[in-house]
Amino acid sequence: MRTFLLIFRLLPFALSFARDRRRLLFWGAPARRTEAFHRARAQRLARMIPTLGPTFVKIGQVFSARPDVVPEPYLASLSTLTDRVPVVPFARIEHELVAAYGAPVDQVFDAFDREPLAAGSLGQVYRARYRGEDVVVKVLRPGVEPVVEHDVAFVRMVLRFVERWWSHPQLRGLHVVIDEFERRIADEMDFRKEATYARAIGQKFAANPRVIVPRVIDGMVHRRTLVLEFVEGTRVDRIDPLVRMGVVDAERVVDAVVEAYIQMMLVDGLFHADPHPGNLLVRADGALVLLDFGMVIEVDPAMRHHLVHTALAAVRGDADKVVDGFFNLGIVAPETDRETIRRLVGIIMELTERGAELGEVQAALADEVMHLLYDWPVVLTGEMTYFGRAVALIEGLGAHHVPNFNPVTYVRPLLLKHRTAVLRALGPTDGETADLAFALGLLSRDVMRVVGNAGRELLGVLATRIPSVFSAFSRPAPAAAVQPVPVVAALGEPAAVAALPAATAAE
Image 1: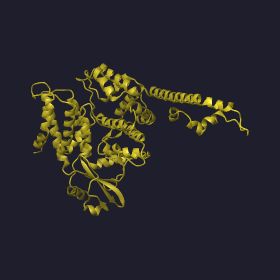
Image 2: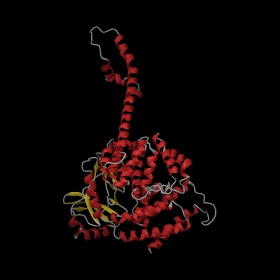
Image 3: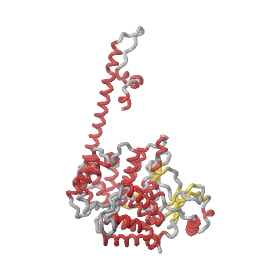
Image 4: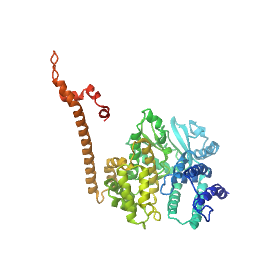
């Protein structure tokens, strides 16, 4: 019956998408589709997916960070799925709690709020008190395991059917997403593993006051239930009121998110692989709170080596090494023409270095190389699927909160800041000396740039103020003689600074 229900709900969308290629399904030109049509269809799809159950919500969340597979406006609509998951009635949740703890809820907890704080795709979260402490209780949705197993098999069946009628390399990306989802979903439905990862990552950030990981409550961990300390905060995508009131510095929040993921991906090798805005909170003091460790990836040293050296090559502007990194990371199909990727990387690096807008980057890629990539798409594979989600989150936050945000130039100093820790974690590697020399050269270049800018500003101040200083010396001294005022002191007087032109004072 569930198979028939899924077909009934999905068939109208399948036919609609098929008509994008053939107006009469099997023949004829493509149906005419406007931007407004795609936007409306994307919104309808996002509203329908939660009615299909937790598997499709979770898969939709993964696809929401896959611009290599899903185009806009569908990408943006899928990102709303984090907020649109139906709530399971508390009576069913209570049954799970009694089964886990062997007693009625009010006997186990001092207090328990029956309204959920959050309803995720796999579990629901409640606020409670346990032994005098505010806690949150996470409960797996009843009966979710057989539903997930059935739905993954159904999606694979649909993919096989589509491939019989439409052979396209882009389908490889769909298979990658489903394969990776199936690999990880079993761990996510076992809260004992989530508790283990939460403790491990909390230990890694224990000395960092800017990143908070809620403490796991000992003795309250079961396969289907989990109790953690309650940490209050605001979702990272809803901090605008705090920013306007001056409570939170938005750029420091973006810095904290970037540095946290640099540490997890490249230093610790334990990566929080579900980085949607609902899993990141910001406390009133600006600290970042990480939530939900059901999906954590242990990044092996070889992968970290490739990530680090690809990132350093990008910082150096070495396009050939970046291309090597793409192939080593497996995000480019082995049969892809190397020169095509080299041209792609060169254009991206050139445009991002000078701060080009995203639209300009896309236009340049479309004109130069994207038509060549049609048969050899760049597809995120394995762990890179989740790294892509983190990058999408950072880009969204940066674009919203940082003026003229450029991901490459923004991340560069933060990567160099943590470079010693990264290389120490990975151990010595070939080319490390050259990388260090480059990093020091880049640092000296930036220092000289700052000094040069400061020198020009100082000359501007002197050119503006020295005539008035000399005119002050040339005026007759008053009857009561005073000591001459040194030039430095005159330039430092508040009145002198206030008298500067507006542009200079702003600088």
